[in-house]
Image (cartoon, rainbow, N blue to C red; front, top):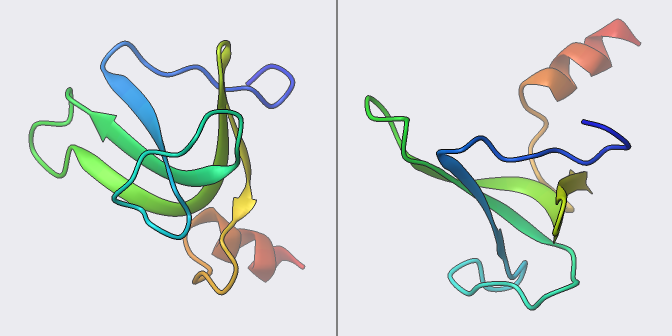
Amino acid sequence: GVDGIYKEAPTMRVLPKEITDPLSAAVDQRSAQMGVIDLANVDTLSFILTEDIVHKEEKGFQVLGRLDNSDTRGCNLMYLESL
C-alpha cells in the first residue's frame, strides 16, 4: 500500500474489533483487532479474525503489528528464518 495504507477489494471489508472483546466493533480512531470479511471467498471461510492490530481510516487501513503473545505464523516465520 501507499504510505502503509491498504485499500479493501470491492468484495472485502476490514472490520475493526475491540482487542479485549472481539465480538464488539471497535470505537472509531482506535487501534483494534483486525477482522476481515470477503464475500468473494465462497469455497472457504468468508470471515476471519486475525491477531493483527489495525487502524481503519477513510482512505483504507494500516496494519500496525501483532497482538501481544500471538503465535508467529505465515510470513513472520519466513522473516525469522532469514535472520
